[in-house]
Image (cartoon, rainbow over all chains, first blue to last red; front, side, top):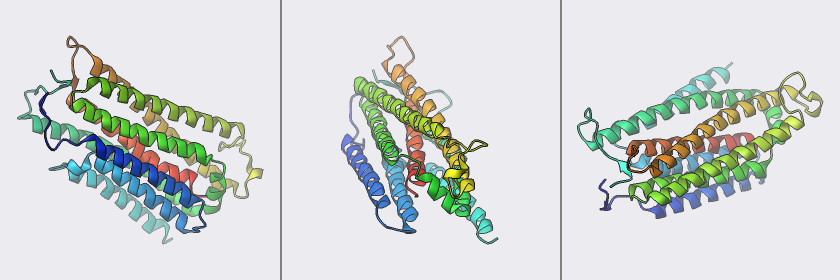
Length: 96
Length: 214
């Protein structure tokens, strides 16, 4: 990155504001869903909204959408290991 | 002169390799953090499946408005850090420093609100152990497990936040350092930013699991 020229692919400030707005809307949605009679759907909806927020933060704030080479494997690997941890544990607990 | 130090140590072939290596190392560390918290989230999931009534009952004791305010301000602090990274890349040192200071201040507010919440719970004796007010709950066993996880997981998160605030303040200081002092390495700012966003990311899951499950 040079000190004076602005490369054309440099992310601008506007997408960050839009993403922040979306994140706050999702937070409002999470609170709204909490007060609706959603029954056993409630945790599913709450976690889906949290997942959407996480994806926005990963892609835009943490710049995972610009990840190249081995980096996507490492980022994806974290979630793969989490999935293995949860799947194998619940395969045990739920089948006892 | 750039705000960020882009000089190349000799063991790197080019700048791109250095940046890729830096990001890869930071993400490997974040992966270990995700798995550290992952173990805690797994404990939560298993215990919640085993004690649904106790968890639902105890989660009524949490203050949803305070939790929501904390989530909102932490999201705003993440914006500030992401924007500071952009500002530093455009050599806007003053804006980057203001945004980092703002994010650190928000972090302190978050901890203040969290400490207030802990204080209220301590006052009501909602702490697992021999003095737990079991008579207040129809499922005191599950409720105690819930409070145990609540303190353990939000406490571990708060510890990360304290470290994050320290990193933000150091980064802010280093960005203001004059030419005689060492300039901030470009990778340090992106590392700090990634760490702060991860702390935000973890709270995004703690918030619905503890506050919104009742």
